[in-house]
Length: 269
Image 1 (spheres, rainbow, N blue to C red):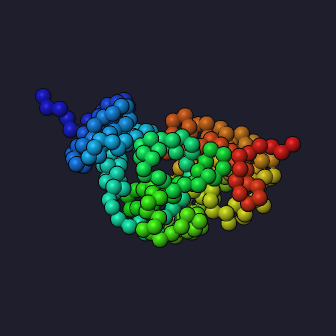
Image 2 (image 1 turned 135 degrees about the horizontal axis):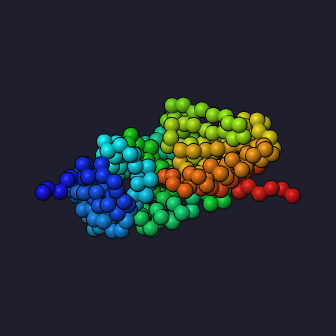
Image 3 (image 1 turned 135 degrees about the vertical axis):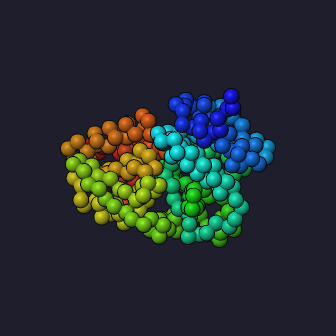
């Protein structure tokens, strides 16, 4: 009896380790030069020397129930990895800001090593701005070594990256709720909208008390007023729920807008 290939095997009920082995099988077919091997559950080692780590936690967390959609998701993930590996001069108009937390920063440092310095800056509390390149099938983190090639200094990055969001995003919507509202912009850059200062200057006058916000995941940005009845509780409850079983997580930290910037929320005495 022949062993099913990774595509048909994805239709079965899987645990994390079984999925990791199937992803390695997919890489062996779609990216044979990567020499992918299972290192541990939800972690692949690959690359010419086997020294590159690929973590699958987000892909596993967002894995569709439908078998065909699972094949598409795995294939897309492998193709995005290969796209990221391509050597090319990044387009300055595709530089974007990502919002990530301390855990992400530690994980990426372990995965990429100290010789591949990312371009980052602190945002507030446990949050950081990580600069990246928006590509057709993926988002690749920007390396410090690429800055001279692109021709941009660190001091100009934030302004350029935030402006690029306005060019890349087709639509930005505000979805009001009973006690909290959401920012919607397509599913990849909601957390990044924390950096669009003009938006928050407009919103400050539309909430009760100080403006507070939370980005539990890449695709979810919530805000309310610190004095809105039930507002803070709603933000905390949704953040807890997302972090229990969500993917592409960012942070449960509640931020407050003061002096035209974000800081960790604490009530003033």
